[in-house]
Length: 167
Image (tube, rainbow, N blue to C red; front, top):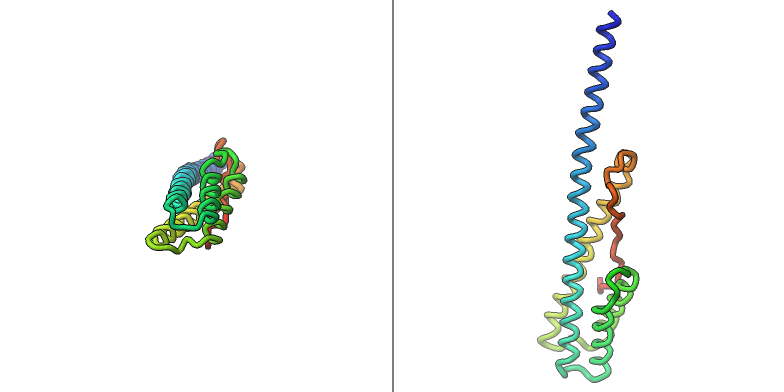
């Protein structure tokens, strides 16, 4: 009887290990996909921020606004475009300053109002989408099994982008 009981114990242990391995593999794949989505959404956000800054630069140089507003917008757009790529805090501050400059000036002139409004909404949506993916990724990475088995590898913990975007 001892041999039969030992066999059942080994079968149960093997089944548990197999299930744990399958779960770990599935979770690692999901985590990898989430990290790729974070990178992709960050690239989309960067693109939308660049488009907005370029549009603001065009508006400021079009001669439609008063000189003070044009100068304020040009300066804010230039600072946003030239923020250090490796400094998230600096980028957030400069992009927020651009949003404040847009809101402080009379940028509701046609035909720029519709295009600038669309650019602002696209930035808002891209930031929200990015932050949602980051939160999902961080939640998964905080699970005990993920941290115990080091399923995230050496990927850095993603961070949300917090900036004033007019929302």
